[in-house]
Image (spheres, rainbow, N blue to C red):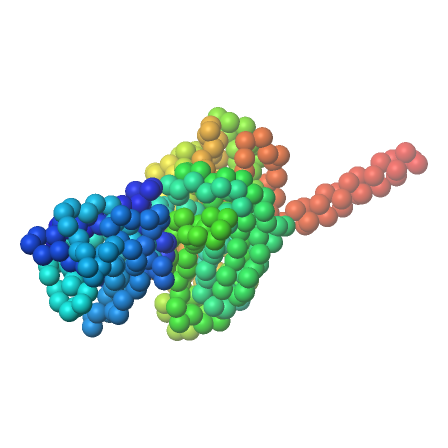
Length: 451
């Protein structure tokens, strides 16, 4: 028997999808009346495994008994069997199979030629396997602070086209209490006019009322991480067509580390200008809800460095330490070279915590203000990041995927032409101060007029 070959209309085999395998079979001396197809571990044949369409060679396909090693099998009956066997080359025998979540280690496929009356093997063939190809550039970014409501930003790139009415099937670890509705889902770069629905505590559906074309997409909603790390701390995103069939997917994405000793939440992202090729003053911050514990209480959850990462094509204009303004002077900075601004798409701030029992990040807001150049066009992945990094890695953190990164806040940026949202982190306090100054000035003027 000749080796089988595999194909799919889009030349892709996404995880958890029904794909079509095309078999080319050439009998040697004997004419088999049945074919047994043995798939790699993790592939599963559908209940009606032949098709689409009819075959001049095969009359029926049904799933068979798994092999002792757990591989799925399919039994294909040759048309006219048992009186007539397969004679000459048979090309394009189509079989339906469900793909696994990832490419198996042993990828080979096998075909046996069988005599249906005696169940005797007449010959066999082998072929290299099919690569299971997940969505490209897939990310799920959120901080894992126990009990703190946080934004989760999703990014993915698909090569598939899905007609209007398709949806994203999001799978979360149990206990994350997702919040997603038409009012709360953030369509950073995704046509989500169909809304969003929380199916259960581990499943969210994001509906799309326009056609999805091959490109990059970004969106966000909110979760609240649980008190303890879930048993299976993995996430998945599945792109389904209007009928619910899998078009593309990325599964078993590692979840963020759960940080039960820290309580920190996302702050504000502020800007002064949204005009292309102009300077904008940015303010990015986070809020410490409870003062950080010391080394004895939380030796594995200490913060040594803060990494600010700009979206693609943005450039910061920090040329000296004083170009980076701290919005909280109580931040315990390293004595020497506390800021690294040499890479123009990121800024690194080094801390020196626990020099004494009183030197730590106390409860309050911690922000950073600096100038950037606004690009044109704006990036699709228009998200700003502020990462908190552990001291346990000598190289520190220079990107959000580094092992030193304990948690990352992902904040959607502005679009060209959006209104400025100011500079003040605690705007309520500033307004009260301004009103007090104005009232005192009026009293002085009234007194002068009376004299």
